[in-house]
Image 1 (cartoon, rainbow, N blue to C red):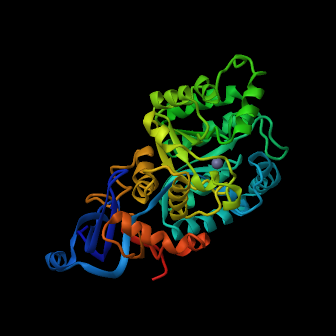
Image 2 (cartoon, helix red, strand yellow):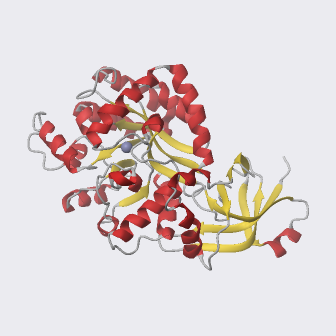
Image 3 (cartoon, protein in one colour):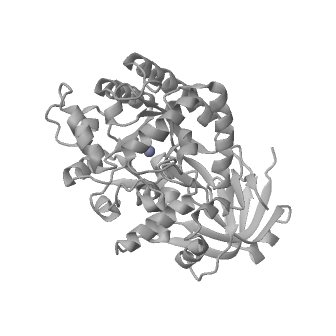
Length: 431
Ligand SMILES: [Zn+2]
């Protein structure tokens, strides 16, 4: 197979670290074909590069700005239709809207149709990877992993206790599903207790053991709201071996669930001891600002995630949309919420540069694919999105300008992406 070159002409914004991103105006991105698809071969000033690759196909996207595709590190693909339902409290929103909706996914036909639709929605907002919660039904994991374009891990939620009829399974059923799906999907599978109250500790323990054996991931929810913590600790007093368990985190620790391939959703209300445990084990927190935001901002009002405390404790973290706890699938909306909420609380350091890093490279690193994707460095797979190029002298200024029109009409973020490329092929386009 002969090598094929493609050149994209556009501005480029490449995340580097929490504090650094690079903006290159009037750039040329040279894409080179490989077995895995098109990779980024070179990025440089267009006037010099174009002449150096005479046979290359030129894709003129002048006036557009390229960013890497997003990693959404916590979302429920089976909650797409409850995103905007009233959210007076987490536990009420779950039982009133979310659980009845997830029951519909028992139908294989419904699940398949929804997965096809949802995979298009992901591409339209520029998301090309992440960590996915499905419903209790095994086929909802298959439907997600077979249909979503990009690099995802997914898991069926395990619900063996304190769960509504129609969304409950026996311990044997739960374990059987973990066994078969982790064998089928390996490192793309995530053992996914919904959260400690809904999953027997012996299921979590056996599931964690299996997940680790198969190289799969583990994901669940941790300390999202204060009511939830009291509820969890109250419940576990009655579980043998957990009578004196000091914290919510210790429940998961005792079940062998913590580690470098474990992602905890939310983690807002954590003690210093809990943070030390997460740090020591390399466990990751998926922070979902739009879901945690006040109810008036379409969130669940769970509180503000103290990223400074988390970073000081050395805990790894990345951003997620938490659809349907979060109202919009766009990671741009999630970035804006992170910046705005911290600004309102007068906390410094929550820049768009940081938000972009946590919505791209940090997620790729959690999934262990950061050597192949997550940014626009040379050698990376060409997974990128194009948006109208904003003004601004540097990366942070450009990102501020990019977000400005959307503060008061957040749903318009869903139309911000003009084109999405996966491995150098256009997989979504309005251009
Ligand atoms: Zn969630």
